[in-house]
Amino acid sequence: QVQLVQSGGGLAQSGGSLRLSCTASGSIRRITDMGWYRQAPGKQRESVAVLSSDGRLKYADSVKGRFTISNGNTRTTVYLQMNSLKPEDTAVYYCNAQTGWASKTDYWGQGTQVTVSS
Image (cartoon, rainbow, N blue to C red; front, side, top):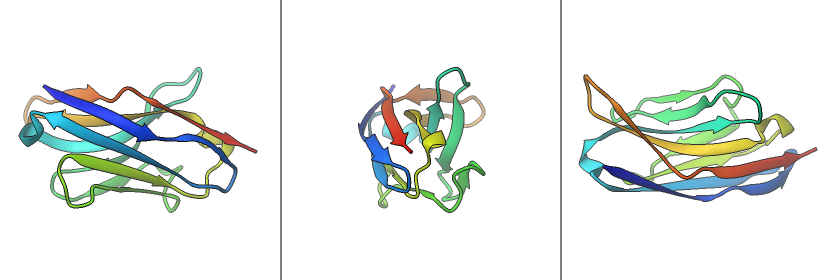
């Protein structure tokens, strides 16, 4: 089992910045990928940024050049630096960790509201 605890987020104006943090505990040695997802009202949850165990980064097209995922060279914490925020970035953001290789298991943080005002 992996437990994920998120912090950060809140309210920002358009063009502003926010930072999200997520710390993992439990079976951290089994973690392969960590990332951030978001879900806006009435929409499906979508991938925002993923950091793979081999160091590869993957971003949604909508956030490329504005958001940066990093782990501070640890396997237990992942950050999401969000710059040049837009109102359409408003959503509940979830930290995700995957374990396993052939068969993956997803773990989720508690969710953090990010609201961007125009």
